[in-house]
Amino acid sequence: MKDSLLKGLWVTLAVVLLSSAPASAGTFAAYGTWWDTDDAGDAAGIGLNYAWDLGEVIDLEVRGAWYEELTDKPLDDFFSGDSPIATGLTVIPVELGLRFNFARDLTFWNPWVGAGLAYYALDTDAGNVDDEIGYYATLGSMFGDGKGADFYAEVGYRFVEGEVSDLGDLDGDGLDDAFDVSLNGPFVSAGVAWRW
Image (cartoon, rainbow, N blue to C red; front, side):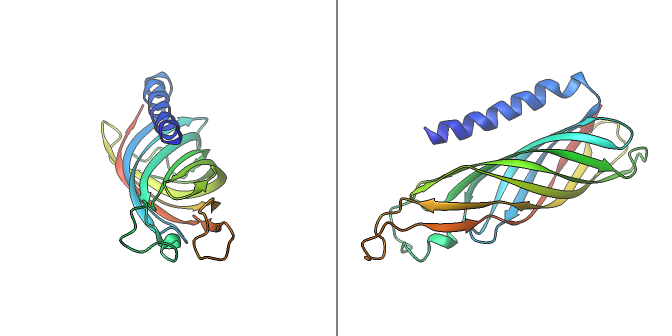
């Protein structure tokens, strides 16, 4: 059930972004992304971003990414490498924020800084993890002439904490094991963008 909810969130975001793109001035980007978290290792993913022009320098952006499986560092203490239990963590961040453009009029370089709130849809095959609310900050740019596909690149940082629970009695102490997981960490994205 949770897998279908996660896939539904991703598909809904894609449909909203793609259908709204021609309707207003803004920027649409599709990219590959890599995220390195404090406790859950790192993962590559894919993402979409749409930013609506709100004025000369401010954009409202909605963005989403899909990270299939962060590595299982926090679970290494509980499971051996030959465990039949899948211990990865799937994360779909859906983010809403503002971007401040430093030089939107430049045709070859359009740098920005952005920040906003995020909903993190989390899923794991080992135990239970609840979805979380967090926030993010980015520094990025488009490179090109603005007449077709341009290069899109950004670096950022996500702030989110979670808890994996309902793991059962893993260490023989008679108590159900649970632990906090910090997903705070930097991310890098690169891809193509189109401006209307």
